[in-house]
Image 1 (cartoon, one colour):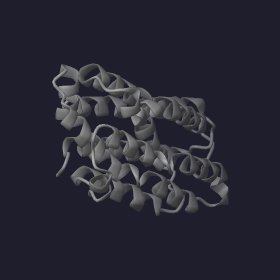
Image 2: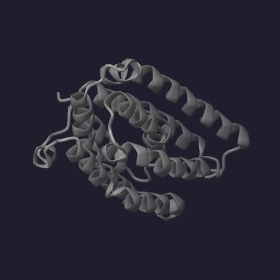
Image 3: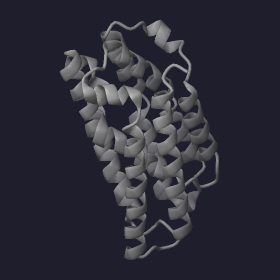
Image 4: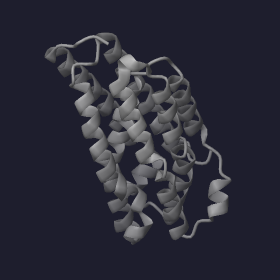
Length: 225
């Protein structure tokens, strides 16, 4: 990896900000999130959302671990960060399962579920990318996924509670990620501004962020398909 100037880092930040704006535009057109915003969302909508998210969430720690195994010693900082991140996230799906059961869902049915079209595409992309030598571009994926947890998850949880009268114990997965992913985004920002990201790496990070942003929105659009 090559050292990047302050101007280049600012450019990377600006480019990722543009990707985020595109993601927000896609999310604004997702039917279940539209109903959530309008206050017409149902408990069945929330149950479906958890059901569909769980099938992808279980893959989170495994693809991060796979990425960690493909960083060489020259990328030690990224390997160490990925190992730490995988360890922190490998039980996240259990929180989601508890929320699902708390609203009356069947744990057996949840665990027997399959990924929807968007989740299949997202997980497939993440594992394929993680198999590359030194998959630095996955920092772009983290920018999207951790950013959603830090910036949107708590707001979604609060709105579900307002509309459906849910208890904190029924939205714990989303509320937890506001804090946990807030810490992860801080770690990510430190890496992106550390000077270890080269120009080619920056291009890969932005491209990966673009793909993951689109696929994440797609999994929310394709509930149950």
